[in-house]
Image (cartoon, rainbow, N blue to C red; front, side):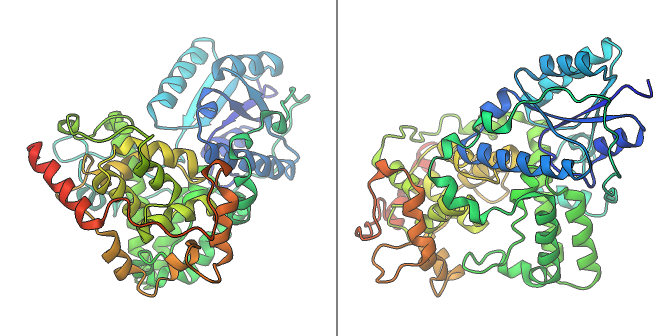
Length: 472
């Protein structure tokens, strides 16, 4: 048994430090075989997150190589590929980091049960979240449906200190065969957009730690204010790295706690944002319908539009609504693969309320376009904006994207950075948008900037009328 390898099955945890499953495998003294499996869950990813995963895997394989290890790549059904690897290597254990979406839970539960029945040490570990969703309960034993009470419950909880990266990983006597990452062609759907987005990617564990360090040393001081200013470098940017586990929430939490103890006034707001992510997973665990159905089920009868051939929905996707805040945010996404949080709220509100379009249309589009896509956060964010989700504020709140721009981008730095039409000297970023988008959109920087597809006041009135008529 001392020579039988441990398979460490990596998924959305592409790091070496603060990795309980990897640390347990290395601590066993047995050979460690890192594995990644391209299964149906990878196949189903949108263009941008799949491309970003490919970059992350390539970089992580290099990090393992520096420890005289390697990442074994296999494609197929996860259960069958793990069985093959066990047979090929004589492995007696499989360790992995837990995931929480329903498909992953079902897959992992079946695999764990079958492997244990066959005498394999199958273990799942924490690491993707700070608080396991089933450990946070209300006083009556239920789950939390509102964020603020959830925050109040967990804010004083102990969060496990981050683990150091393990030392050299013991290699097996012989390595199993591996697919070539290039053969998977994970970048195919990105097409020419990959070259545009690539300079904005902060790839891998070291870059994530540098990003966190830079944020804590400077930006966090005023984060409570700058996080709402899309024209300012005022956020951590860590969602990209958290989505693939290139950094752990524990590492972010303890860095934020140290900043708070040092008196940096924006640190608590940063901690609240980390807990907002936890809240999304809490809801996904307890109410998995949040991923594909209205969290508030009385919204099932609401008359949202779903026909994506409609001109106004096409205009929203293209960043051509004629509403500067909406268009700037959508274009930022095409060029960088990410979108400012304030922009996400505005584009989601405009689509679901001013354009009366189903939140699932926007959810799916973000899943296709965001390199920081996260299943729980994306679903909760869209439902929160649409009114069908876990928001204590009344559903009839309709953001005015014009006054929001006046409030958070008064000098129009954000709009100017991302919108080229009508400007004599557009920014490099604004021009990059036209290099990223599909050619079939037939758009150019010297086009006229469009009039609003739905004027702000008109859209708000239609939304409120629809709420009233449906008895909301």
